[in-house]
Image (cartoon, rainbow, N blue to C red; front, side, top):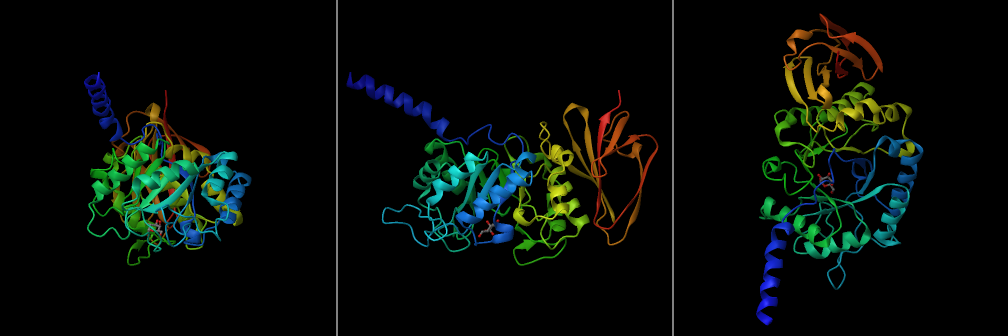
Length: 391
Ligand code: GLA
């Protein structure tokens, strides 16, 4: 009898083991969309800020447009774990604890995201997850967390793949489906190993609120875009390249640069995580972030990341295959002057046959892919077209 139950326990263990070593599937069939506190507020997060932002996301139509995850980035923790090693929210900033945030968000139709770090401390010097993975995952599950952004500061000599796998297994063991967002900055090419570990992975250092500036660990979006070319083969439903959060609506970008940044992120099937102060969002930024036809390119069910078809000074062409034989084409002027686009449709060799053409910023049908496409394209701006087979 004893022997039989040992044998069945062993059988259960053997069957359970491969199941444990899995991420939660089906959670990010299309790239996650939401809002994250970091780009505008850095460490200055609080219960009040998150709740006000959620209310503003509802009022501004952002939730309706698809921005469902609200992610509390670095800064939510108290400086030390408690005596049992549990993570503790900062009592002044989050007086009602993290479950209260989750409840507030869930009651309004959002999903709840939180940040921590695979190293010993977060980049802001708060307690990191290393050595506490299973305990922390249980806390996140108990708080109703739906999305974990897991950073890479203070990782010492740790191996990235093993470290992130440990947290994946911990989330799995805690039992609550949680999107796992790897924030390893592309250091060890996560696109080559993270498909079965997380649902998205950062491909570069941090984005900055500018078109083409550069810091020690951060980059304007134009440089980040350049680093995405060639990564398209690694993305697909449930596993996305993440070129970092959006700067749309922040002061460092012109209207054209905001529109182009957003359009190109959609072409990349990038996670669309807004990073502006939605409470004080100018109409122009709102118009960009809630352009449903551009969002639809990002969220297309085929889940193909776009690729750079051509790069000439002033004229980049990006293309994204969509479901139903449709295509998105984005012309991007990366130069400092207006260029005249003259594109012979027959040169776009990925197309086959004739298509109807729609301009997604003018929100206007333009006719068919016959002869040449001509349009002036201002500096740092885009022309985004959706092509539908003309039957
Ligand atoms: C890193 C990440 C950022 C942000 C900060 C928080 O720099 O890449 O996105 O989470 O840490 O400290």
